[in-house]
Figure 1 (spheres, rainbow, N blue to C red):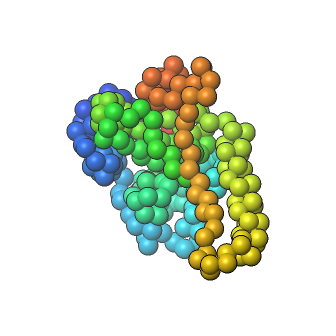
Figure 2 (tube, one colour):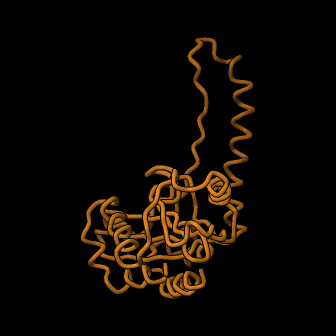
Figure 3 (cartoon, rainbow, N blue to C red):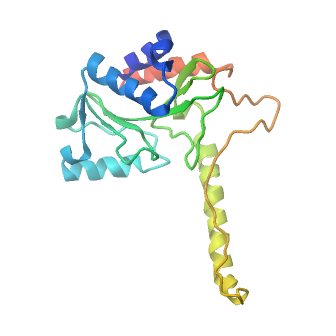
Length: 223
């Protein structure tokens, strides 16, 4: 049923882009899940402890590539901002078969690529990106825009940097003769850069945009 959400985003963009803030954009998606698809909005507190522990562990795996089976008592429900507004994912949707993480990206400006912050697209999650400034919406599954090897390398980079940070912090106190506590601070953040001519960072102008959207529709049908 999530495929119906993607299809309406493609065919009725203006209904969703009549919003200048990310929260308004997300509210329109939440309303579609409830009013059109008939999903019920629930809270984490409504989920059994053992079920939530399994879901949380699965969602927290940045390298996961499968979709978790939906517990029988959660079918056709969803949680909005399960970990807070700034944490992945924005929605956890429980279809009849699978648990589907959905992350929503939105820009009020003429921005053609999302802000990724500390996470890159996950293989077992779907993404919606809307740009108010460009009047366009696209969607995709993380597995279709980032290879497992690339994802592993990107996260591994910051693991290596943190190891160096830990070593520096062991050596740093001897240099801190003023006792101010200055030390390096590493914050993971990811971006898209045009590092070779064939790269297209725009999610709207990418030559495989339609192909990737169609894959998302077909993949979500199976879930």
